[in-house]
Length: 322
Image (cartoon, rainbow, N blue to C red; front, side, top):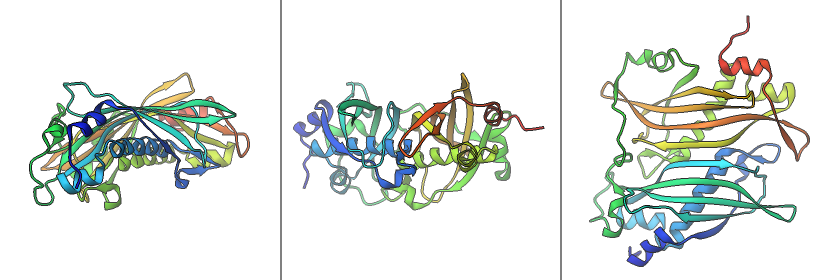
């Protein structure tokens, strides 16, 4: 049995840890480069290992204390690309103030390139400990962790008021009206969830990646189209996502991908908002942003960033060809 001790919680909140991480093979979709989703998975794994090294592993927190470890926000900058088989060192530095209701970390991931150690990723992460209510109560929350324990994700936030929903068949049109946006409805399957009932952070990251794929396909510049036409691939220097409420297994999730800004024909920023329909109202469960650019494949090892041409700019901006 794992005991929640003052020593363990002090280590969790004050001691910096390091661990080695390696991207999953699944994340190498184009040549041997690793996409942003799997880079965020490395950050998540480093945070989970920090809990292990602090003698408070996620499994024990749940099985023995009924506390589900949920990443509720992750804000990541990618400074250097990851490749298949890279072995990186992740440093997790605690970043929690006395008044915080979530556990915070700053994560730095470094890789070796040509004999030089490079800072490849920086990320800020927040964690909540969700009190399990699906199964029988596990007893009182350990007092050392009580301020981080919540009855529902987002309980520590000032939530946006839920808004009255139009007729269900009109929701997507209403969510995109007057915006440079794309939206879709999707039923949440169990592989995107954890702790028996709710979508987890990795599920939202998968949806962020899918949002890009759906958006560009809708605009006539699908991933494969630009690959085949000009060997262009999408790159993501930054992404962030924050959980505002809970989205549950088999609920319908409405996802809205909105282009907010195009910066110097070089990158564009999109916001992603996620909603569920409850009791006739739309409840926002998460929000985030993702910054996109394009790179041209030079060979099996190298790529370089490119500026958008007019065709791609028109597609991103929603300008339909005459």
